[in-house]
Image (tube, rainbow, N blue to C red):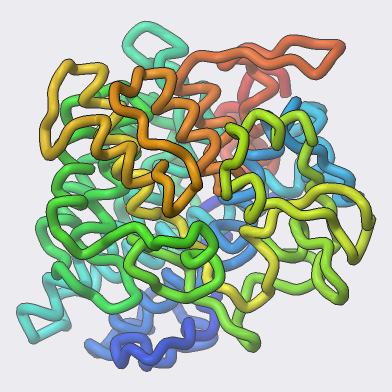
Length: 464
């Protein structure tokens, strides 16, 4: 039997139900399924497809669970402990993944499904007659395409810096929608990591120029700039990372909440740059997917599969409110162990980017570059760590290590762990083995169905 590959899967993409929101721009009900060649025939269809992109990204395979949880499991040693029975996630946590890892396939397939929907929107822009709507939809489509390629290359390729010139295989760059039978059987090899990063930066730069400054709960100009800051930081381009983060901060759209819990306990607070919209009826899952499903240990909530290692909790400074309020002793499944309270409700929104990250990026890059663009590193770090928010004194002359430490304390269990290990070229140990930042077993396998269906045009990663 012929195996499915990227194009085969995304040709018959299913668009999930629209994310529920009070913003009228999300009141467009997408089709349950579309024929890729003919479905987008009206401006409403194009709008529906964009809403479908957000629905796919909010699913458990992507930001609804895996893109926020899997990076934590890949470098869980001394930090967290996976205690669940899901084979694909267990393999990721133990670094024993094989080429048929189910979670790798889920992420790959859903990522390219979102990319194909975004490309379908770009291809259909000619039917959108309102120029403002057309520009906005194009910007959102480029945003989706850019961030999905970024997430895929970070998980399925050796990290930036692993080879001279970053010529190691990245992922397949898709800039055209799959619509015809010929498209289905087109075989496109993996681009290099350098080429993928160039494509991501191009898409996000164009998206930032086209999207409005306020787009309700959907991505806007500053969401694209925030992702640009992340991309530039990941590749060590500190000047551009600083410029993008600075523009997000200087927009004055966002501000830190006084309480560390507010951004997780409430929806769309001023601290959140972009978050996945969820509610009781529409969420990533309550049994086999969802952040609260895997992290929670409360009565009726959670499987308690991701346990926090006490030694990590002890690294927080004495008296830090984050240690007191973001962690608790479980009372539900697997009681008596430590869990994070960032994810404790099935219906909560899932912050993907917070303004805290932008302050941390600007502080770090200013220290690295010896500048004070926007503000001093001390003032930026004081937005995160201060007597009111964290019960800690402001650091008057923070060092680079101070900022890196705050990134760990502040962004724990939000999808950063393995990416930080790679960016900072660190190692970690699990008692029996030492894992370097560029170890092949920290990279997801390309789904073997892709390799076989393309007869090796899409190559497998080393070790699989």
